[in-house]
Amino acid sequence: MSGSTQLNALETFLQGHPTIKYTPPSSPDYPAARQIFNSSRRDNPLAIVQPQSSSDVAALVKYAKSSSLPFTIRAGGHNLEGLSLVEGALLIDLRALTAVKVASDRKSATVQCGILQVELANALWEEGLVTPRGALPSVGYVGWATYGGYGPFSSHWGLGVDQILGATIVNANGEIVKADESLLQGIRGGGGLYGVILDLTIKVYPLTSLLAGAIIFDSSDITKTFVDFNAAYEKLLETEALPPQLTLQQIAFKAPTGRAFAAIFVWSDANIEEGQVWSEKIASLGPLVANTVAPTNVPEWFSGNGALVPPVVSGSAYTHNISRVSPAIAETIGRSLASMPADPGTMVSIHQLRGPSTEQQVHSSLFAAREPHYMLEFLGFATQKNVREISERWAAEMTENTKQAGLEYLLPSAYVSLYNSGVQAKSSADLLDTIYGSKVETLKGLKAKFDSQDVFSLAVPALK
Ligand SMILES: Cc1cc2nc3c(=O)[nH]c(=O)nc-3n(C[C@H](O)[C@H](O)[C@H](O)COP(=O)(O)OP(=O)(O)OC[C@H]3O[C@@H](n4cnc5c(N)ncnc54)[C@H](O)[C@@H]3O)c2cc1C
Image 1 (cartoon, rainbow, N blue to C red):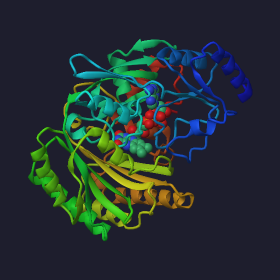
Image 2: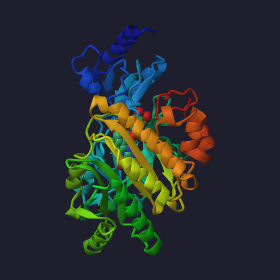
Image 3: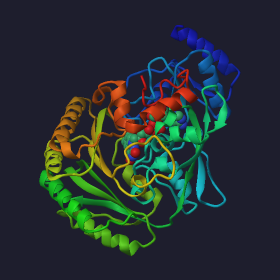
Image 4: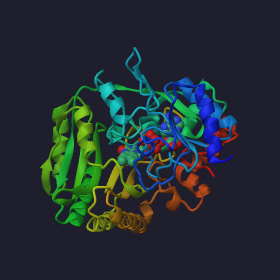
Protein backbone atom coordinates (compact mmCIF):
# COMPACT_ATOMS: atom_id res chain seq x y z
CA MET A 1 0.00 0.00 0.00
CA SER A 2 1.40 3.44 -0.89
CA GLY A 3 2.05 6.07 1.77
CA SER A 4 -0.83 8.27 0.63
CA THR A 5 -3.28 5.33 0.64
CA GLN A 6 -2.11 4.46 4.18
CA LEU A 7 -2.59 8.08 5.25
CA ASN A 8 -6.09 8.21 3.78
CA ALA A 9 -7.04 4.99 5.56
CA LEU A 10 -5.54 6.29 8.83
CA GLU A 11 -7.51 9.52 8.52
CA THR A 12 -10.73 7.57 8.04
CA PHE A 13 -9.94 5.56 11.19
CA LEU A 14 -9.12 8.73 13.14
CA GLN A 15 -12.49 10.27 12.25
CA GLY A 16 -13.96 7.64 14.54
CA HIS A 17 -11.42 8.49 17.27
CA PRO A 18 -11.43 12.28 17.51
CA THR A 19 -9.54 12.36 20.83
CA ILE A 20 -6.33 11.11 19.19
CA LYS A 21 -4.16 14.07 18.22
CA TYR A 22 -2.97 13.77 14.62
CA THR A 23 0.06 15.36 12.98
CA PRO A 24 0.47 14.43 9.31
CA PRO A 25 3.63 15.30 7.31
CA SER A 26 1.74 18.22 5.71
CA SER A 27 1.21 19.86 9.13
CA PRO A 28 3.45 22.83 10.03
CA ASP A 29 3.80 21.11 13.44
CA TYR A 30 5.30 17.93 11.93
CA PRO A 31 9.02 18.94 12.03
CA ALA A 32 8.82 19.85 15.75
CA ALA A 33 6.63 16.83 16.58
CA ARG A 34 9.17 14.56 14.85
CA GLN A 35 12.09 15.91 16.93
CA ILE A 36 14.08 13.42 19.01
CA PHE A 37 17.39 13.55 20.93
CA ASN A 38 19.53 12.09 18.12
CA SER A 39 18.90 14.33 15.13
CA SER A 40 21.08 12.22 12.83
CA ARG A 41 18.14 9.84 12.56
CA ARG A 42 16.55 11.24 9.39
CA ASP A 43 13.63 8.78 9.02
CA ASN A 44 10.22 10.34 8.50
CA PRO A 45 7.25 8.60 10.08
CA LEU A 46 4.05 8.18 8.07
CA ALA A 47 2.35 10.45 10.61
CA ILE A 48 2.48 11.15 14.33
CA VAL A 49 -0.47 10.28 16.56
CA GLN A 50 -0.83 11.16 20.20
CA PRO A 51 -3.37 9.06 22.12
CA GLN A 52 -5.03 10.75 25.12
CA SER A 53 -6.10 7.59 26.93
CA SER A 54 -5.32 3.89 27.29
CA SER A 55 -8.29 3.04 25.07
CA ASP A 56 -6.89 5.35 22.35
CA VAL A 57 -3.62 3.36 22.48
CA ALA A 58 -5.51 0.08 22.27
CA ALA A 59 -7.57 1.32 19.30
CA LEU A 60 -4.38 2.40 17.50
CA VAL A 61 -2.66 -0.98 18.00
CA LYS A 62 -5.78 -2.82 16.83
CA TYR A 63 -6.01 -0.58 13.77
CA ALA A 64 -2.30 -0.88 12.93
CA LYS A 65 -2.44 -4.67 13.23
CA SER A 66 -5.54 -5.03 11.07
CA SER A 67 -4.03 -2.73 8.40
CA SER A 68 -0.56 -4.33 8.58
CA LEU A 69 0.74 -0.85 9.33
CA PRO A 70 4.15 -0.87 11.04
CA PHE A 71 4.37 1.46 14.03
CA THR A 72 6.86 2.72 16.59
CA ILE A 73 6.43 3.96 20.15
CA ARG A 74 7.94 7.14 21.57
CA ALA A 75 7.84 8.67 25.04
CA GLY A 76 10.96 10.75 25.83
CA GLY A 77 12.56 10.29 22.39
CA HIS A 78 15.93 9.48 24.02
CA ASN A 79 16.74 6.15 22.44
CA LEU A 80 20.39 6.78 21.55
CA GLU A 81 19.98 5.49 17.98
CA GLY A 82 16.70 7.34 17.48
CA LEU A 83 14.82 4.07 16.96
CA SER A 84 11.44 5.60 17.73
CA LEU A 85 11.52 7.01 14.18
CA VAL A 86 11.25 4.58 11.27
CA GLU A 87 10.70 5.67 7.70
CA GLY A 88 7.04 5.26 6.71
CA ALA A 89 5.95 3.76 10.06
CA LEU A 90 3.23 5.33 12.20
CA LEU A 91 4.71 7.02 15.28
CA ILE A 92 2.58 6.61 18.42
CA ASP A 93 3.64 9.32 20.85
CA LEU A 94 2.72 8.58 24.49
CA ARG A 95 3.61 11.94 26.00
CA ALA A 96 0.01 12.85 26.94
CA LEU A 97 -0.17 9.98 29.46
CA THR A 98 1.68 11.10 32.58
CA ALA A 99 -0.41 10.28 35.67
CA VAL A 100 1.22 9.08 38.92
CA LYS A 101 -0.74 7.37 41.69
CA VAL A 102 0.94 6.51 44.98
CA ALA A 103 -0.50 3.44 46.75
CA SER A 104 -2.07 3.98 50.16
CA ASP A 105 0.73 2.00 51.87
CA ARG A 106 3.27 4.39 50.18
CA LYS A 107 5.42 1.45 49.10
CA SER A 108 4.54 1.55 45.41
CA ALA A 109 3.23 3.90 42.74
CA THR A 110 1.56 3.34 39.40
CA VAL A 111 2.95 5.57 36.66
CA GLN A 112 1.68 6.10 33.14
CA CYS A 113 3.77 5.42 30.09
CA GLY A 114 4.47 8.92 28.75
CA ILE A 115 6.02 10.31 31.90
CA LEU A 116 9.55 11.77 31.88
CA GLN A 117 12.10 11.17 34.64
CA VAL A 118 11.76 14.69 35.98
CA GLU A 119 7.95 14.60 36.07
CA LEU A 120 7.93 11.35 38.02
CA ALA A 121 10.75 12.33 40.38
CA ASN A 122 9.14 15.70 41.18
CA ALA A 123 5.70 14.16 41.74
CA LEU A 124 7.15 11.59 44.17
CA TRP A 125 9.34 14.17 45.94
CA GLU A 126 6.23 16.19 46.78
CA GLU A 127 5.03 13.06 48.62
CA GLY A 128 8.37 12.56 50.44
CA LEU A 129 9.20 9.60 48.19
CA VAL A 130 11.77 8.60 45.60
CA THR A 131 12.41 5.76 43.21
CA PRO A 132 15.55 4.89 41.26
CA ARG A 133 15.74 6.93 38.05
CA GLY A 134 18.24 8.12 35.50
CA ALA A 135 20.55 11.09 35.47
CA LEU A 136 18.72 13.29 32.96
CA PRO A 137 15.30 14.93 33.33
CA SER A 138 14.03 14.58 29.75
CA VAL A 139 14.49 10.81 29.34
CA GLY A 140 11.28 8.74 29.31
CA TYR A 141 10.82 6.80 32.56
CA VAL A 142 9.29 3.59 31.16
CA GLY A 143 11.94 3.26 28.41
CA TRP A 144 14.65 3.85 31.01
CA ALA A 145 13.29 1.42 33.61
CA THR A 146 12.17 -1.47 31.42
CA TYR A 147 15.49 -1.87 29.55
CA GLY A 148 17.69 -1.67 32.66
CA GLY A 149 17.77 1.74 34.29
CA TYR A 150 21.13 2.77 35.78
CA GLY A 151 21.10 5.93 37.87
CA PRO A 152 21.95 7.81 41.03
CA PHE A 153 20.03 5.48 43.37
CA SER A 154 21.16 2.18 41.76
CA SER A 155 23.63 1.26 44.51
CA HIS A 156 21.01 1.84 47.18
CA TRP A 157 17.77 0.41 45.77
CA GLY A 158 18.85 -1.24 42.52
CA LEU A 159 18.25 -0.74 38.83
CA GLY A 160 15.00 0.59 37.38
CA VAL A 161 14.16 -2.86 36.04
CA ASP A 162 14.19 -4.29 39.58
CA GLN A 163 11.56 -1.82 40.81
CA ILE A 164 8.82 -3.15 38.51
CA LEU A 165 6.03 -4.90 40.42
CA GLY A 166 3.25 -4.80 37.85
CA ALA A 167 2.27 -3.50 34.42
CA THR A 168 -0.71 -2.92 32.19
CA ILE A 169 -0.14 -3.36 28.49
CA VAL A 170 -1.89 -3.27 25.16
CA ASN A 171 -1.18 -6.74 23.85
CA ALA A 172 -0.76 -8.02 20.31
CA ASN A 173 -4.57 -8.29 19.91
CA GLY A 174 -5.03 -4.66 20.88
CA GLU A 175 -6.49 -5.63 24.27
CA ILE A 176 -5.71 -3.90 27.56
CA VAL A 177 -4.43 -6.56 29.97
CA LYS A 178 -2.62 -6.78 33.30
CA ALA A 179 0.75 -8.47 32.88
CA ASP A 180 1.05 -11.89 34.50
CA GLU A 181 4.34 -13.06 36.05
CA SER A 182 5.80 -14.39 32.80
CA LEU A 183 4.95 -11.24 30.86
CA LEU A 184 6.44 -9.17 33.68
CA GLN A 185 9.67 -11.12 33.33
CA GLY A 186 9.75 -10.09 29.64
CA ILE A 187 8.97 -6.46 30.34
CA ARG A 188 11.80 -6.36 32.91
CA GLY A 189 14.61 -6.07 30.36
CA GLY A 190 12.69 -6.56 27.11
CA GLY A 191 10.70 -3.31 27.39
CA GLY A 192 8.24 -2.95 24.52
CA LEU A 193 8.96 -6.28 22.79
CA TYR A 194 5.63 -7.77 23.94
CA GLY A 195 3.22 -4.85 23.89
CA VAL A 196 2.72 -1.17 24.48
CA ILE A 197 3.23 -0.60 28.19
CA LEU A 198 0.42 1.63 29.46
CA ASP A 199 1.59 1.82 33.05
CA LEU A 200 4.08 0.34 35.47
CA THR A 201 3.63 -0.25 39.18
CA ILE A 202 7.00 0.38 40.79
CA LYS A 203 8.58 0.38 44.25
CA VAL A 204 9.00 3.74 45.97
CA TYR A 205 11.00 4.66 49.07
CA PRO A 206 10.70 7.39 51.70
CA LEU A 207 13.36 10.10 51.40
CA THR A 208 13.11 13.77 52.30
CA SER A 209 16.74 14.87 52.21
CA LEU A 210 19.27 14.56 49.44
CA LEU A 211 22.96 15.32 49.44
CA ALA A 212 24.31 15.67 45.93
CA GLY A 213 26.56 17.60 43.59
CA ALA A 214 29.56 17.44 41.31
CA ILE A 215 33.11 16.93 42.53
CA ILE A 216 35.20 18.58 39.84
CA PHE A 217 38.89 17.81 39.47
CA ASP A 218 41.71 19.82 37.91
CA SER A 219 41.75 18.60 34.32
CA SER A 220 44.70 20.53 32.90
CA ASP A 221 46.29 17.06 32.60
CA ILE A 222 43.03 15.13 32.25
CA THR A 223 44.82 11.83 31.50
CA LYS A 224 46.75 11.91 34.76
CA THR A 225 43.73 13.10 36.75
CA PHE A 226 41.54 10.30 35.39
CA VAL A 227 44.22 7.62 35.92
CA ASP A 228 45.07 8.78 39.46
CA PHE A 229 41.40 9.11 40.48
CA ASN A 230 40.59 5.59 39.32
CA ALA A 231 43.68 4.11 40.99
CA ALA A 232 42.71 5.81 44.26
CA TYR A 233 39.06 4.81 43.88
CA GLU A 234 39.94 1.15 43.24
CA LYS A 235 42.10 1.25 46.37
CA LEU A 236 39.21 2.76 48.34
CA LEU A 237 36.94 -0.05 47.14
CA GLU A 238 39.50 -2.62 48.33
CA THR A 239 40.00 -1.06 51.75
CA GLU A 240 36.58 0.29 52.73
CA ALA A 241 33.03 -0.89 52.28
CA LEU A 242 31.31 1.84 50.29
CA PRO A 243 27.87 2.51 51.78
CA PRO A 244 24.96 1.62 49.48
CA GLN A 245 23.48 5.11 49.93
CA LEU A 246 26.39 6.50 47.91
CA THR A 247 26.23 6.38 44.12
CA LEU A 248 29.01 7.84 41.99
CA GLN A 249 28.99 8.49 38.26
CA GLN A 250 32.26 9.54 36.64
CA ILE A 251 31.87 11.96 33.75
CA ALA A 252 34.11 13.85 31.34
CA PHE A 253 32.54 16.75 29.49
CA LYS A 254 33.19 20.13 27.89
CA ALA A 255 33.14 22.80 30.60
CA PRO A 256 33.43 26.55 29.84
CA THR A 257 37.12 26.24 30.77
CA GLY A 258 37.75 23.20 28.55
CA ARG A 259 37.60 19.43 29.05
CA ALA A 260 36.72 18.53 32.61
CA PHE A 261 36.57 15.35 34.68
CA ALA A 262 34.12 15.10 37.58
CA ALA A 263 32.43 12.60 39.86
CA ILE A 264 28.68 13.10 40.24
CA PHE A 265 27.95 12.31 43.89
CA VAL A 266 24.51 11.32 45.22
CA TRP A 267 23.85 10.39 48.85
CA SER A 268 20.33 9.03 49.39
CA ASP A 269 20.00 8.95 53.17
CA ALA A 270 18.78 11.17 55.98
CA ASN A 271 22.19 11.02 57.68
CA ILE A 272 23.64 14.03 55.87
CA GLU A 273 26.72 14.25 58.13
CA GLU A 274 27.83 10.77 57.14
CA GLY A 275 27.26 11.67 53.48
CA GLN A 276 29.40 14.77 53.86
CA VAL A 277 32.27 12.64 55.21
CA TRP A 278 32.02 10.49 52.07
CA SER A 279 31.87 13.52 49.81
CA GLU A 280 35.15 14.76 51.29
CA LYS A 281 36.69 11.30 50.96
CA ILE A 282 35.80 11.15 47.25
CA ALA A 283 37.00 14.73 46.75
CA SER A 284 40.39 13.74 48.20
CA LEU A 285 40.92 11.15 45.44
CA GLY A 286 42.14 13.72 42.93
CA PRO A 287 43.33 17.31 42.48
CA LEU A 288 40.18 19.16 43.54
CA VAL A 289 38.89 22.27 41.80
CA ALA A 290 35.40 22.44 43.31
CA ASN A 291 33.16 20.28 45.45
CA THR A 292 29.55 21.36 44.94
CA VAL A 293 28.08 18.52 47.04
CA ALA A 294 25.46 20.08 49.35
CA PRO A 295 22.02 19.37 50.76
CA THR A 296 19.57 19.77 47.92
CA ASN A 297 16.30 18.34 46.61
CA VAL A 298 15.27 16.33 43.60
CA PRO A 299 13.84 19.21 41.48
CA GLU A 300 17.00 21.30 41.99
CA TRP A 301 19.28 18.34 41.34
CA PHE A 302 17.53 17.55 38.07
CA SER A 303 17.64 21.09 36.75
CA GLY A 304 21.40 21.24 37.42
CA ASN A 305 22.00 17.92 35.66
CA GLY A 306 19.74 18.79 32.75
CA ALA A 307 21.94 21.76 31.91
CA LEU A 308 24.92 19.43 31.33
CA VAL A 309 23.57 17.76 28.19
CA PRO A 310 22.23 19.52 25.06
CA PRO A 311 18.60 18.67 24.15
CA VAL A 312 19.44 17.67 20.58
CA VAL A 313 22.66 16.22 19.17
CA SER A 314 23.79 14.08 16.27
CA GLY A 315 26.15 11.12 16.23
CA SER A 316 26.32 7.76 17.97
CA ALA A 317 27.01 6.16 21.33
CA TYR A 318 29.15 3.15 22.24
CA THR A 319 29.07 1.02 25.35
CA HIS A 320 30.50 -2.08 26.95
CA ASN A 321 30.72 -3.48 30.45
CA ILE A 322 33.91 -4.12 32.38
CA SER A 323 34.47 -5.66 35.80
CA ARG A 324 37.28 -3.33 36.84
CA VAL A 325 38.84 -0.03 35.75
CA SER A 326 42.37 -1.46 35.71
CA PRO A 327 45.39 0.84 35.39
CA ALA A 328 45.71 -0.06 31.68
CA ILE A 329 42.03 0.68 31.02
CA ALA A 330 42.23 3.95 32.94
CA GLU A 331 45.35 4.93 30.98
CA THR A 332 43.60 4.21 27.67
CA ILE A 333 40.43 6.13 28.55
CA GLY A 334 42.52 8.92 30.08
CA ARG A 335 44.58 9.32 26.89
CA SER A 336 41.39 9.50 24.81
CA LEU A 337 40.00 12.17 27.12
CA ALA A 338 42.97 14.37 26.23
CA SER A 339 41.74 14.43 22.61
CA MET A 340 38.00 14.52 23.38
CA PRO A 341 36.33 16.80 20.80
CA ALA A 342 35.37 20.07 22.46
CA ASP A 343 31.63 19.90 21.85
CA PRO A 344 28.97 19.83 24.59
CA GLY A 345 27.44 16.73 22.97
CA THR A 346 30.64 14.67 23.33
CA MET A 347 30.94 12.99 26.72
CA VAL A 348 32.16 10.01 28.67
CA SER A 349 30.09 8.64 31.51
CA ILE A 350 30.78 5.65 33.76
CA HIS A 351 28.01 4.09 35.83
CA GLN A 352 29.07 1.55 38.44
CA LEU A 353 26.66 -1.26 39.25
CA ARG A 354 26.96 -2.55 42.80
CA GLY A 355 24.40 -3.25 45.50
CA PRO A 356 21.00 -4.98 45.36
CA SER A 357 20.76 -5.50 41.60
CA THR A 358 23.92 -7.64 41.66
CA GLU A 359 22.68 -9.81 44.49
CA GLN A 360 20.04 -12.51 44.52
CA GLN A 361 17.11 -11.40 42.39
CA VAL A 362 13.71 -10.95 44.00
CA HIS A 363 11.95 -10.72 40.63
CA SER A 364 12.60 -12.64 37.43
CA SER A 365 13.81 -10.51 34.54
CA LEU A 366 15.62 -10.57 31.19
CA PHE A 367 18.29 -8.15 32.41
CA ALA A 368 21.43 -10.26 32.19
CA ALA A 369 24.37 -8.14 33.42
CA ARG A 370 24.12 -9.06 37.10
CA GLU A 371 27.78 -9.19 38.07
CA PRO A 372 29.15 -6.02 39.67
CA HIS A 373 30.44 -3.92 36.78
CA TYR A 374 31.14 -0.56 35.25
CA MET A 375 28.92 0.40 32.31
CA LEU A 376 31.04 2.58 30.04
CA GLU A 377 29.28 5.20 27.93
CA PHE A 378 31.35 6.78 25.17
CA LEU A 379 29.06 9.41 23.66
CA GLY A 380 30.24 10.32 20.16
CA PHE A 381 27.69 13.09 19.75
CA ALA A 382 28.02 16.71 18.71
CA THR A 383 25.92 19.83 18.51
CA GLN A 384 28.03 21.20 15.65
CA LYS A 385 27.61 19.49 12.28
CA ASN A 386 31.31 19.61 11.44
CA VAL A 387 32.27 17.88 14.73
CA ARG A 388 29.88 14.94 14.42
CA GLU A 389 32.09 12.63 12.38
CA ILE A 390 35.17 13.47 14.44
CA SER A 391 33.26 12.75 17.62
CA GLU A 392 31.86 9.45 16.34
CA ARG A 393 35.31 8.29 15.22
CA TRP A 394 36.78 9.32 18.57
CA ALA A 395 34.17 7.31 20.50
CA ALA A 396 34.54 4.26 18.22
CA GLU A 397 38.34 4.26 18.57
CA MET A 398 38.19 4.73 22.33
CA THR A 399 35.79 1.77 22.56
CA GLU A 400 38.10 -0.52 20.62
CA ASN A 401 41.24 0.63 22.42
CA THR A 402 39.60 0.26 25.83
CA LYS A 403 38.47 -3.28 25.03
CA GLN A 404 41.96 -4.24 23.88
CA ALA A 405 43.55 -2.66 26.95
CA GLY A 406 41.53 -4.75 29.37
CA LEU A 407 40.50 -8.02 27.75
CA GLU A 408 40.65 -9.82 31.10
CA TYR A 409 38.12 -7.36 32.56
CA LEU A 410 35.87 -7.21 29.49
CA LEU A 411 32.45 -8.70 30.29
CA PRO A 412 30.39 -10.46 27.61
CA SER A 413 27.42 -8.16 28.36
CA ALA A 414 26.45 -4.66 27.21
CA TYR A 415 23.57 -2.31 27.98
CA VAL A 416 20.89 -2.29 25.29
CA SER A 417 19.97 1.36 25.82
CA LEU A 418 23.45 2.61 24.97
CA TYR A 419 24.47 -0.09 22.51
CA ASN A 420 25.20 0.96 18.96
CA SER A 421 23.41 -1.98 17.39
CA GLY A 422 24.13 -0.86 13.82
CA VAL A 423 27.91 -0.87 14.40
CA GLN A 424 28.78 -2.81 17.55
CA ALA A 425 26.70 -5.92 16.77
CA LYS A 426 27.81 -8.21 13.94
CA SER A 427 24.27 -9.60 13.50
CA SER A 428 20.94 -9.63 15.32
CA ALA A 429 21.94 -12.94 16.97
CA ASP A 430 25.14 -11.31 18.19
CA LEU A 431 23.13 -8.32 19.49
CA LEU A 432 20.78 -10.58 21.44
CA ASP A 433 23.62 -12.68 22.87
CA THR A 434 25.49 -9.59 24.01
CA ILE A 435 22.49 -7.91 25.59
CA TYR A 436 20.56 -10.86 26.97
CA GLY A 437 23.25 -13.55 27.42
CA SER A 438 21.77 -16.64 29.07
CA LYS A 439 18.26 -15.11 28.87
CA VAL A 440 18.01 -15.17 25.05
CA GLU A 441 15.98 -18.37 24.88
CA THR A 442 13.57 -17.08 27.55
CA LEU A 443 13.16 -13.85 25.57
CA LYS A 444 12.39 -15.80 22.39
CA GLY A 445 9.97 -18.11 24.19
CA LEU A 446 8.09 -15.13 25.60
CA LYS A 447 7.99 -13.51 22.16
CA ALA A 448 6.46 -16.66 20.70
CA LYS A 449 3.94 -16.75 23.56
CA PHE A 450 2.89 -13.08 23.64
CA ASP A 451 3.57 -11.74 20.13
CA SER A 452 3.84 -14.65 17.72
CA GLN A 453 2.86 -12.47 14.75
CA ASP A 454 5.50 -9.86 15.60
CA VAL A 455 3.01 -7.00 15.86
CA PHE A 456 5.63 -5.07 17.87
CA SER A 457 8.33 -5.70 15.27
CA LEU A 458 9.81 -2.19 15.54
CA ALA A 459 10.28 -2.25 19.30
CA VAL A 460 13.74 -1.88 20.81
CA PRO A 461 15.79 -4.05 20.36
CA ALA A 462 15.34 -5.36 16.81
CA LEU A 463 15.03 -9.15 17.02
CA LYS A 464 15.62 -9.72 13.29
C1 LIG B 1 20.90 12.01 27.15
C2 LIG B 1 20.59 10.61 27.60
C3 LIG B 1 20.80 10.25 28.93
C4 LIG B 1 20.53 8.95 29.36
N1 LIG B 1 20.78 8.62 30.66
C5 LIG B 1 20.60 7.35 31.07
C6 LIG B 1 20.89 6.97 32.43
O1 LIG B 1 21.30 7.78 33.25
N2 LIG B 1 20.71 5.66 32.77
C7 LIG B 1 20.24 4.73 31.87
O2 LIG B 1 20.08 3.57 32.24
N3 LIG B 1 19.92 5.08 30.61
C8 LIG B 1 20.10 6.35 30.19
N4 LIG B 1 19.80 6.69 28.90
C9 LIG B 1 19.21 5.68 28.00
C10 LIG B 1 17.67 5.74 28.10
O3 LIG B 1 17.26 5.33 29.39
C11 LIG B 1 17.00 4.83 27.06
O4 LIG B 1 17.41 5.17 25.77
C12 LIG B 1 15.47 4.87 27.16
O5 LIG B 1 14.92 3.75 26.51
C13 LIG B 1 14.91 6.14 26.58
O6 LIG B 1 13.52 6.18 26.79
P1 LIG B 1 12.67 7.30 26.02
O7 LIG B 1 11.25 7.11 26.32
O8 LIG B 1 13.26 8.64 26.30
O9 LIG B 1 13.02 6.94 24.51
P2 LIG B 1 12.11 6.73 23.21
O10 LIG B 1 13.07 6.95 22.09
O11 LIG B 1 10.88 7.54 23.26
O12 LIG B 1 11.70 5.21 23.30
C14 LIG B 1 12.64 4.22 23.00
C15 LIG B 1 11.99 2.90 22.75
O13 LIG B 1 11.58 2.33 23.98
C16 LIG B 1 10.41 1.56 23.79
N5 LIG B 1 9.36 2.13 24.63
C17 LIG B 1 9.41 3.27 25.36
N6 LIG B 1 8.27 3.42 26.07
C18 LIG B 1 7.49 2.36 25.79
C19 LIG B 1 6.21 1.95 26.19
N7 LIG B 1 5.48 2.63 27.07
N8 LIG B 1 5.71 0.79 25.69
C20 LIG B 1 6.43 0.04 24.82
N9 LIG B 1 7.64 0.40 24.38
C21 LIG B 1 8.18 1.54 24.87
C22 LIG B 1 10.05 1.64 22.34
O14 LIG B 1 10.61 0.55 21.64
C23 LIG B 1 10.72 2.94 21.93
O15 LIG B 1 10.97 3.02 20.56
C24 LIG B 1 20.03 8.00 28.43
C25 LIG B 1 19.80 8.37 27.11
C26 LIG B 1 20.09 9.66 26.70
C27 LIG B 1 19.87 10.04 25.27
